[in-house]
Image (cartoon, rainbow, N blue to C red; front, side, top):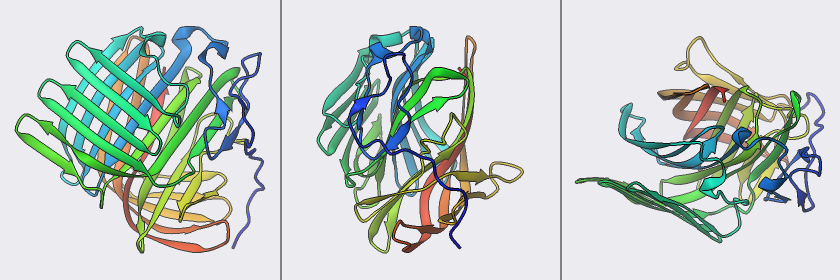
Length: 340
């Protein structure tokens, strides 16, 4: 049965600024980077601005994560590799940056061609974007990583979310999944490889000014259903999502917008997660296999995130009412609580 509450979400179809002249966000969602981000338009102190470019590369066993970004007084450049089947962290290198503010020169668009790099104190990390190809490079002591991503879907999920607590707070975010990944990471004599037939990439590109305390649920995945690439981005919990929720399906070159999605958890994080929308179009169950817990405490920053890796099964309904049977798509869902 289809039904539920009517959507009030606004699709942003024309170019315009992320923020108006008073620093208030143009709330809504889009399928491309329609809005123009200008850091100079933000009406907030530099230490309240948060900017990050986070890439994740995974297959049915390994997950590799690249991070360049900053939140409030602290920034981070990091690389992490783990085996979520064995529940083993294989590599974790991180450099904390105190009071970086605008010094990282984060790009103003996640889709346009650009280079973002960090090269200090023996740490070299670079993201290169040229059309549908993205190259991720890292050299850090004995660590050497080279990853190539090819974007296979023209659409993505882009939101510009306001916060009720502060009319000048906002979150402008783009999620690009449905990227084929290949490459390697080495640590001395150890090497792990990602094959393009079974590996996928994800970009989480975020810019904004957030209230000090917030909480979110997020899930993203890419896989194959009967030989066709399928992807999803789902989330809830932060900001005013009446005009812009981050829920979208990707299949056969088309994107399909969903309304609000709820994350229903058991008594502990390792119990199955149930993800369902309010219109009867989504019913997924995540069976977790590994809890990648991260915790950051620095000055008054206090963040904790449980990123649960496992398999998704269930059903999803496209805009034309075609029903997809989702079987054993390996990916993640997470719950984060932040004071930053």
